[in-house]
Length: 313
Image (cartoon, rainbow, N blue to C red; front, side, top):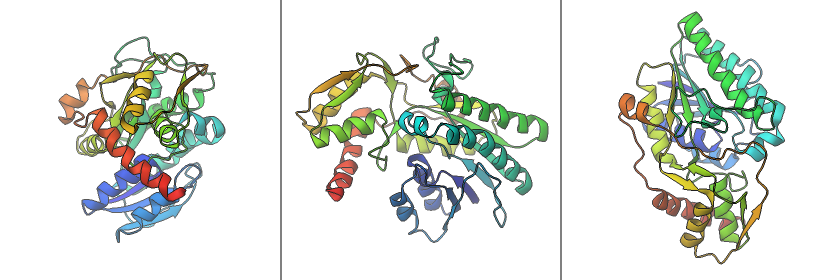
């Protein structure tokens, strides 16, 4: 296949590109490097079937040659990043999705949207099935990401219904693993970096809020399986094993052997109190469920972060 993949310099985009290249496909990677990492591009640049196009998909995009897939993974994804880039985040999920859907139509390509568990907001239903409509503050600080992705899902299905475009939508829950950006502000990377540097681990609120953490290899396997089925509606991918944020901090301290204390800060506005995927649909439709336990996944991730931080010192 010949695949266009936006957000290719990001954490998930670079992992998905590596998987596709390993399978022998050609990948045209697109990124404007607003939050992506050039070191991820260096990894991918070793592959003869990878080409990189620096572009902002919020503007119309033209790509020479045929395409089998357009995979839209471009967007700031961590709260510090999308709060710093609020308009850019809205535009990449609104105008960017529209331009890439139009490109898919012109090329006769299938379209794949990377959505997020954030569409559920601060959920009143637990765990969250795809049928749950969510509890999102449409004008709160996080709405730039939450509502951007909700609009992108609606637009994707509008193109499917109006034009018969073959589409896939994945709702991704918290994912972690090697090649995360140490400075992206997500909870796993923040705890690991703070522990390895001997800095206090910052827990917001009292740490009783919950998240579910999926190792990146499991997530990528689920994405590939979703590409192979003809199902246009959203599918949750994530690990249904639920952790309190405070317990995750304690586990990172244990695995690193760090003496770092835990400090508590006020909970950000609209921060979800609980988040856990119902993956019944993914089990039935894809035969998929995560295999890597959080403790093992964190060990693998720690090895990568030690290398990155040692190289930066």
